[in-house]
Image 1 (cartoon, rainbow, N blue to C red):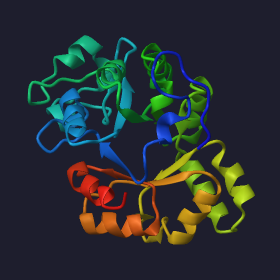
Image 2 (image 1 turned 135 degrees about the vertical axis):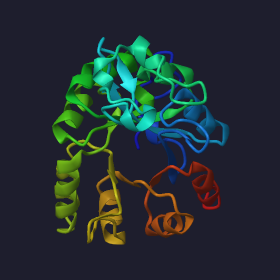
Image 3 (image 1 turned 45 degrees about the vertical axis):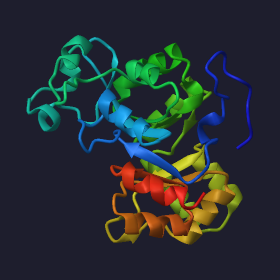
Length: 263
């Protein structure tokens, strides 16, 4: 990927997100084997084993802060039937997620791990502005990839953080998959609409999304293919053999040695 101008003081180029050697291991919500997911501890565990990438998620607190959380409610992670959006950031920090961990803000996570590249899924439209504010405050534009299931939201994020790279939303993935079948690199490049990655499951139902032909087409269009969520080493190996560029995984501890053997 061509290098851009240098962002002030942050040590990263504008285009630096993809500079580490492929394949990439993206620690899904951190390394949450013995830490609560999407917490500072889970991120620290990932860093400790050598991860360069974290995949995480963002919602909005009641007081307008971008909070690191996958679910819209606390039911699964804390056993409470309350929405994240109904609690302030201070209240969310006090929620007991285990291992003396509470929720953290996106700004806190970016600031605590300045060496990490973050793959950020903005879950709700209301969190867009707060996520952008957090990224800009920490000057992390060059080390984030922004995505959303909503392609419209992804395009808005791309416009608001021009120094960041993005991954196509759901509609963008479908469009790219269909266009890839034509074999036209030019049309596929247009279908991506500026996205530098397609982050997809290997298949949807019985429909396989990821084939060697698809991966080759995306590469020719100048983008990467990242697969989620892959936890079995045999699956990891098979996908890496197809040429995928990244694995989003709960088992970064298993994926990193596999990737190291290929570099």
